[in-house]
Image (cartoon, rainbow, N blue to C red; front, side, top):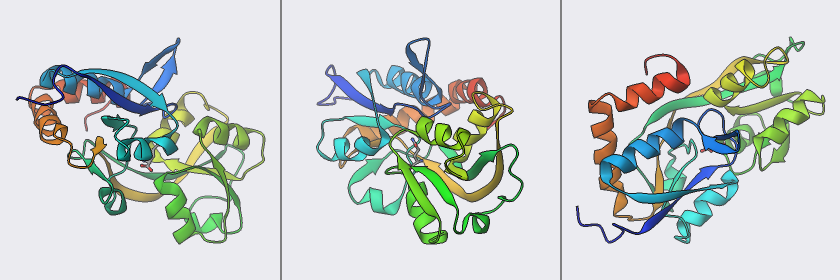
Length: 229
Ligand code: GLN
């Protein structure tokens, strides 16, 4: 395809810390989103560099067109579709509760009423909590690692964040210290995000179809989640 952007180095934003989609390992960013974009860009013959940043800055950066695309486990939402474009969905997700292993009374969203809960600024969780658990006291962090620390030191009762993220954290960095006690929302989908009317959208959608058809998507999924999608 003849893209105006062909040849140019695209700036592709990712989150700074969102295991296992994008995170720093031995000084280098790795994860599902990183591998997915590498595969998409290879198919579509796109030249790019990653730009890790706090989640909160990503949608504004797309709106001002300082960013050409973004992968950060970004939930496709109608309100966001007013200001940015999305690719076809590439991962099904939801929201879940993370508590310390010795906590036995928080299991569902209703158990969070009146509790102090750490959440990440600019994410769908903030909106969910304000609507569904209005009496919870929210502590907002730009980076989820700080929310996990707050839980470890007992300054919050729980963290609510994307299910695959808290599950992965509970099995890795937070192993034996934290556990996922309840799903509070399901049926969310992640999409690759673009400035409005970006000509990259159809190109990336075709590449997503191609990597699903040739087994690359499944390979990447199994690498990070160890099972079939
Ligand atoms: N899925 C969440 C959202 O779109 C954010 C995920 C993340 O923290 N990177 O709001």
